[in-house]
Image (cartoon, rainbow over all chains, first blue to last red; front, side, top):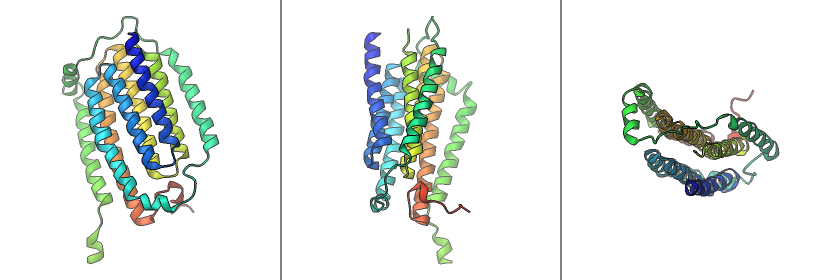
Length: 167
Length: 100
């Protein structure tokens, strides 16, 4: 148990440092790379907690797909942020106060949630799959609908409209 | 014993850092990165509680969060590309077209 806690602590350190870099670094490309660090750290915590499928889904979808997409967007707009010499952030002082207050508020609530004394049994992947197609079938199907809408919407928003200029 | 408390604290810290990023970043892509931090904090909370109480629903909803994050990133980046084409800027505070 202490080894498990130690590994979680290492991953937590990685997540916290990466998250600080994500919000503090001036270079957006470096911020995106530190987001990759955060995502891998969270996947490691999932792995230690016994959620193997989620850990690999996290690496596959977040690090593999979303981060690649973000890096592409940063590179496509690189000229625009290089041309602007204004500071990368604003109102740092009040924002730091607000988020620190939020953290203290949230952290003061957490002792209410004591883990049950018996402790939970390990959640198996088979149980997860079973639940996804029985009791959780409605959210599962709604997510696939959301996927279709998001794909069509993204194509409609980002596509160049040549028909208007030509006709 | 399960490490629920430290994980909840880590999740709170991740959420607060995401809010800090949302408040300070000027670049719209930087705002998207901060939103990913917030979504990850929520997923971490779901998995920590799922492991603590031994329920499968937490993991299922963390999976839904990952799927929704993918949708959000795709639509957000499409909007940013469209903005670059029409307004020629990626900075969220320069977009004041609707200001009276």
